[in-house]
Image (cartoon, rainbow, N blue to C red):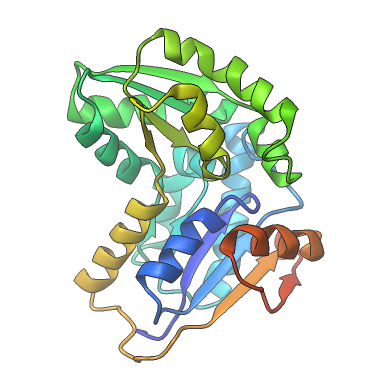
Length: 269
């Protein structure tokens, strides 16, 4: 069981921000990553559709005999986490929302927190609910940024139009004088430099990737599931469409060459 892989799924390349932190923090762990590139983005889909997609993704990862699953997609975490945990118990399933909220609560001083995410994530109020369980007096300002995911997926990270769109999305949050901003989508850390420049030095930018990797390590240790083999783990990448494009994008921000990316028919699972 200890040598079984960690499973990670996302709607596309964004979850690689989480995978990168897992590789760094848990170098001896084997990892299976699935990006649902045929059905990206999830953020514009209905909750019912996202739940179906998440179930398909989970079934695929279970076929790979994973020992833990990270739902590296905020939209899927907001809509599907409870269902996945109930259905696939006792396999631990970790989302990206709670770890990000816990870090944001440590960072905020004026108790004004902004959240940017997909339309589905923001409308679900998942971050608001999680924050209110910790402190009912915190003001939470959500802002959907629907164009961010396709811009990242198309590799248009430092283009002029991306900067202009980011300014339009973020200006209402600046007006609210937030001191902490949660990046409520795993694609958004790829735009972190632009977001930081627009929001200013006084606003803490919360990226869930690092704290999710930390939680993953804690859960594996508690359950006695850490890989005891003292050698570098293997990493396998799967997508539902266009493996060549995924490989190119993945190598760009993982910072190393991805050996191969396999395409699967996710709807068969």
